[in-house]
Structures are given as C-alpha cells and as structure tokens.
Image (cartoon, rainbow, N blue to C red; front, top):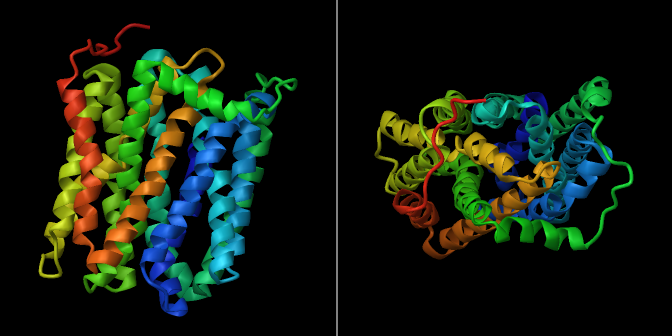
Length: 389
C-alpha cells in the first residue's frame, strides 16, 4: 500500500511541479493551476463517494490497480498540451487516484492491530510525502531531459508498472471481496449520510475539509510561488523536496504519539493550529526573506499540513462499521476533496483579484484555525492512548 500510494502521489503532484514550464509555453495565467486542481478535486469527490461498492465487489487491491491505471492514463492525456487535454487529464487522473486511500484503508483496517492503527496508517501515509519528494527532485530533471511532456509520459508509464507490480498479491488480499455487491446511484447519498449522522465522523469530515484545503494549496502553488519570488525552477524543486521530506518522519511521529502517548484528537488539534499559523506566516513572506527563514516556516507547514493523514484515517477506520472501512473512509475523504476544490479555486480568485499571493495564503489558514480551536475547546471525553490490545 505504501508503494501504490507513492505512485499515486507522484502522479497527482507532478503537474504542479511542472506548472511553471507549462504556463510559460502556453502563456497562461498562474490561476489556471488552481483550476486544474479544482477539477481533480471534483472528480475525486465523486470517485471517493462512489468507490465503496466497487471496493467490496472487486477487492481493495484490484481497485488500487484500477486507480493507478486511470491516473497514468489521465497524465498521458495531458501531453496534448491545451485546455481540453488538461481538463480531461484532471478529471480522469483525479477520479482514478481518488480510490487509492480508501482501498488502502480497507485493506489495512482488516490486518492492523487496533492499538497500532495510528502508527500503521501513518507509516503507509508517508508514501504521500515520498511522492512529493520524488517529484521535487526528479520532476525538473526529467523535464530538462525529456521536456515536460516526456516527464508526464514517463510518470504515466511508471503508474502502470506499479499496477502490474501489485498483481501477485491480489489472491491473498482480495479474499474478502463480495462479487454479488452492486453499485447504485444511491451509494453516493448513503456514503455521505454515514459520516454526517455520526457525530465523531462528522467532526473528522470537517477537519478533513480544512486540512486538505491547505495541503492542496501548498502543493499546487508552492513551487510557482517560489519562482515568483525569484527562485529558478530547479532550486524551487529542491527546496520543495527538502521541505516535504520532513513530512515523512513527522507522519510516523504523530502516529506513534497517537498510538501510545496522546489521544489522537489532541494530536489533530496541535496539527491544525500549527498548519494555520505557518501558512499565514508564508503569506507574509517576501523576496527579501533569507532562504533559511522561508524554509523554516515551510518545514512547519510540511510537518503539520502534510502530516495529519495517518491520525485522521486511523480514527476513521476505528469508527467505521465492520466491512465498511473503505466506504466510510471515502465519505470522510470526500469532504477533503471539497476542500481540495475550494482551496485552490479561492486561492486562484484571490491571486487574480489582488495580483499577489499573500492574501490567499492567509485566507486558507482560517478553516484550520477554526478546527484547531474547536478541538482544543471540545468538552466531550477524548479517547485515552491505546495501551491494550
């Protein structure tokens, strides 16, 4: 599951790393980056709301393979190089990749010891910053050697190879599939209702909205923002990779804390406040800032806005009914996709209206700040650390 999510992460993030080259070739406004990721979020929203029945019928591993193939196909379409091609790419790759997290949650939810779930899910989710790290280092190098189109095609091929690599494991991990399960349009409504009716799942859904919104803006615009500050693309890619690398040990650290020492919701409260504060400070930065200062603030952003997933997903799996982990995870993550749509689109609008990036960064901090304050002030009992079986 780590491997399949690494491929998925690379496929989703590479367009943002290559965005300065694409924008320069097409003489397009940077706001189109937000539109692209907004479309991927809309496609992912429907993909995650409707993937539950497919996971049950075909198995989590098979749907992981389907997700990777669709992601690769969507990236290949982008090399057409014009607006319709990018729109189709966003929809196909966004909708396809959307199943990668629910499928891995379904599989790991079956085999993980409950008390270790925050740690196990966090280790798996380190695949996302691993993908970002690969993109930051290899994306500009591939683009320099092959052009941005060649870089997209090479990554698309890698996604298909990743799907093939999973095939030998299918018999072992898809033994719980239910071939008689059918997809119905009512599954969309059922999935959303399942997470809105339960108070704890509803709270996790709202947190996912806020956290994913900040994460999407950061991954979509950070490299372009650095280029606007005067960095060249290669230097911006390296800084992006260094910053993102911090998220890998941090995800494991937060999972370890949530498994053994601190209630998971308290961990999420600290992450929410940290990401809100750091993204607001990024909004106050300028070209006059030393590289070290901008890197430090960005590291805090990476340690929070790119590192919350394992804690939230393990809590979702804990609260989901038996056999429905994938569907419920898709429901919670669908709220995240709304955030992934709203965040970049609002950022793009503010960029167009103000002509600068600062206002957008600061506005994106507001939902996470609200969530963090709510978690800190919550009066309901917070689940104690898990030391038992």
